[in-house]
Length: 384
Image (cartoon, rainbow, N blue to C red):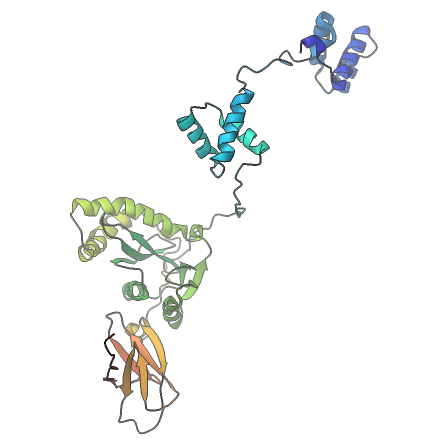
């Protein structure tokens, strides 16, 4: 279509009429600018163009011309045939890479996206709207809040160990951390016991909901929560990794620094790694470079009450019901209670405590009782 055949819109016709009236003196420059919503100097430019070219001067010069970068209809058809038949489940970026690398098509991302939108082939990601977050100031005093977590990683470049530790919210000090082969309940209890022995009882502990502390998939790990409650440690659960960002960022820094340090020292085993971590890395690097001074110099760690035995708190406590013959079953074994007992406790619960060194003892009503393993004959099984 040539430019003479282009239909002029009603808006352009109105512009032409207003500017023509301005040229003929029927309206002022100010009135024309108000009618068209433009500056007065724009009226002058429009008037000069109309005087030279008439109505067609208001039509853009590229109207009716084919763009220089237009993609042919046949190319579009071939591309969309590939997308619909072969790459229908690819995202836009991945699909464009395949079209370029394997088929030689050179089209822009937005062009492909526009074509796919027309065919309803754009994969839509269902994203949860992000919540507005606000800056949280550090606690005023050391010992008010500890963030605790575990970091599974190939710390020696070969084996996955778990570094379990805590960081003080007020100062970023790491009161204690230790490498373990796994992130289990007893390992976490060992770390918390060391923190209390070195510093005292913290006021509160900040942990995530999943994993070793309060996750619904691993209920046995709630034993750690029970131990904290016995010491009146307030437990706060984080709803997201960002909520306990201080210790998450600490793990990133420690991985970046500690792994190469252990490599050049040829540290390959857990005992040597723990020795270097506690005796050199934390005091010589972390405490000097990554800690701050609390706003209030008064520490809020509480001393352990006299008579409190941390060993009896940081242990796994399980319960078994006493049978009629004064026996209990535990770990697929049968045990006889102390035969010297002169009264029946049938139906009562026996508490079995497993300690950090994996030894265990039995208690009833807070007092230790003796038990003996019963050797039950194994059933005879005929050969098949």
